[in-house]
Every structure is written in C-alpha cells, then in structure tokens.
Image (cartoon, rainbow, N blue to C red; front, side, top):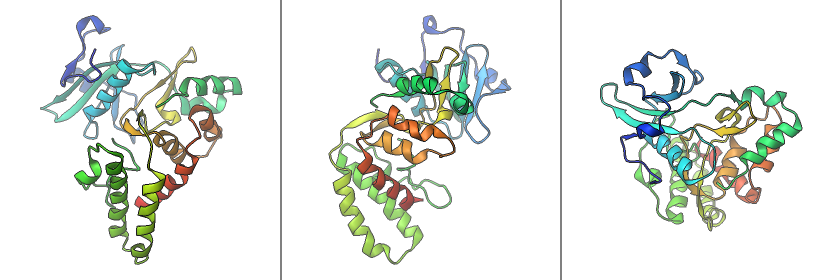
Length: 273
C-alpha cells in the first residue's frame, strides 16, 4: 500500500468499522474531544473521531497515514481525508481511541508504569513552532524561502536563519547587526551533518493517549514531517512545562546525543519569539 494516499482519500469499505459519517453528521456531533484552545475534534458515532476546522490541514492526516503504513508506531487509523467545499474546511476522519490523555493521569502513575510508557515511546523518529514564519500578530509571512519545501540541509539551515532575520527586523535591536553574522556562522556549524528522520514534533503528555491495557497511542501529528535527527529531542525538551517529573523522563524516551544542538535550538526559539 502507498505511503501517501491520493486526496481525497476514503478507506475501502472492508477496512471500515462502520459507514463513514457525512459532513452533516460530523457537524451535528456534540461530543467534543479536543480542549477549548485546540482545533475541533469530535467523536462521531461509536468508531470515529473527526478533526476539522479553519486551522486543520489534510497534511496532518497524510502524516498519520504514512506512520500507520510505514512504521510500527501506534497511531489512530486514518479512514478519510477530504476538503468540503461548502464549509471550506479540511476533514480528517480517524479511528476513535478510547483512553485517557496522559497529562491527566501522569501524576498518579508509579515508576513502573512510567517506565512502561517511556519504553513504548522510545523510538527513532512541516509545521513546527521553531520553524514557522510568524510576525508579531501571529500571521504567516508565507515566504517560500522559509516554508520550503527544502531539498538540502543547507536550505534547511538557511530557512532557520531567515526566521531569525525576520524576527530581527521586527525587533529593531541595533545590536543585531553585529551579533547576527556570528550566530549565522555557528548555525552552519552546529546544525550541519544530520540525516533527516520522520518526526512527530510535538511529544507532550496531552498528545499521548493511555489505553486501559497500558498501551500508549500518539495523536496530533499536525507538526510531523521529515526533520534533522536532532529535532525531536530538542523540540521535546523545549516545549516541556516543568510542573511535574515528565521532563526527567525525556531521556528515557529520546536519545540524548543532541545536547549540543539543544542549547542552540533554545537560542533559536528565543530569537524568533
């Protein structure tokens, strides 16, 4: 089976647990699964969870499809990916996963349970907050030099650098003209020489479903894509909110060989905020 589906995609009937819901049935659902600040995710019937809304992109569903058919990583099955002209929204129809958001129960788990979860999540690994081209009002510049696609590592590093330049123009700090050339020089050293790997890009407890049998399922593949090998570790450390011991388990989930890149990724994040 192809690693990427043709769009629109509708799974064959023999792979469906029930007939696919219509757009009207999706919009009529009142069982919201997502938090208030996230894109809309509703449970539709017994078997389906559907993500849709102005901020939803079919690319996220394509990422899930790729992981489903190319790896052993547990993800919700993708049943349909399509754009609806009447609502002008993309729809991702996926398998409903029964379970609990890990962030809701992490504090109640003992060390053995946490070790089991860490063991399941330990793996080799674009829409990423370190790489999106935002202005101060949260709008995209949509500069293709930044958004890509990028075919070489040099293009990737240059795109990161352009994010810093954009932020500098907005910031208007006179010291930048003397500091930025040195930063660019070190970007070309520290971020050089890393193979691309398929990356989730947003490993947080709220994006991990813990099922009753202890199995974990990664959800929310919106930021997934092919990133340098250091990206998953650095992003995961950068986005942790240190309000419990979740951060101390990252080293049991992801390889720590990229600690050197971590400091520069933190610097990059601060530079573009």
